[in-house]
Length: 339
Image (cartoon, rainbow, N blue to C red; front, side, top):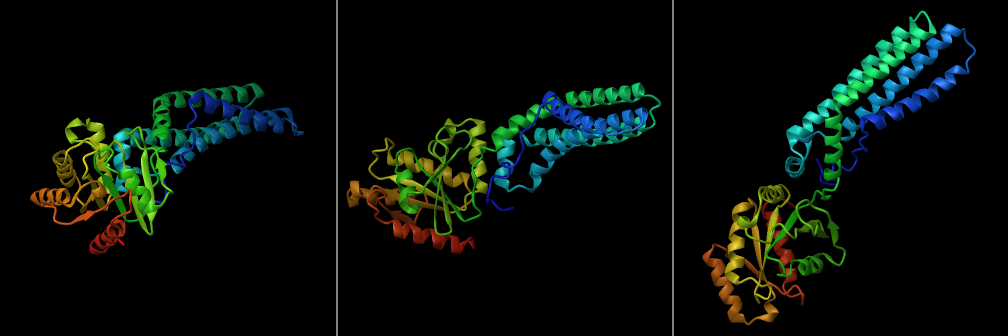
């Protein structure tokens, strides 16, 4: 499945039992009023009015529930990133169970509508036809009340899932590094001023996205910018979900340490990121315009000690080394057949 759009954007508004019944009863009464205008024998007219009311109510309720099913993507067919997000946000098992309740109710209401319509056609008096219609409405209300918890659950799930960011089906670079190392500036310089900000669970700042050519670059403030021991389980799951999105990690180091974190602290975070993600990691030493060559060399030597041989030296603010960085992205994607 393509990552062209958030697959949950098309989920319709979930009506609660009272709202859905009100909608169905109004539609049923409207149809009944049209039937009452027909010139028919009194018993036949009563049957026609009540039968059409029942069929309309059944159709509105059943179709509404079915629409939710049709517009909700099957979890097993989603890209792994979105599957992980469903698990993190609402729980896959609970989500599937709730969608199953919609299917059960939709099919049962449709079946009852046909059964009661046939009974009404055989009614011997207008009173009997009216009694059958009321009996049918009572059963539909009971069914909807039975799945009320699942309807409420799906309504909440919809609000959470439709806010997930939209990703294009392109080779993707995810930027990591401590706060204030220059990630946002780098993203803007690499992709131009047109940086999209999308909401993302578990971070108050949202997710920043930009593009150059056919490469998508994602900055995740609040996720990949501090040690794992500071995380709760939900945050860790959200980070792990990025494994299914990232084809390449760009880790940014602030050579000046003006970000407030030492080089050693930054390299420790890099080691965690390398262990966490099963994709190539590119390291960029940023703010080289603020330090001397000896400092840069010292950082390079420390990186070699942790197994990082390939480093790009840049100044995002001054635009130094950015063309080299772009070429490295393209090279890495070609090496891994991602272009």
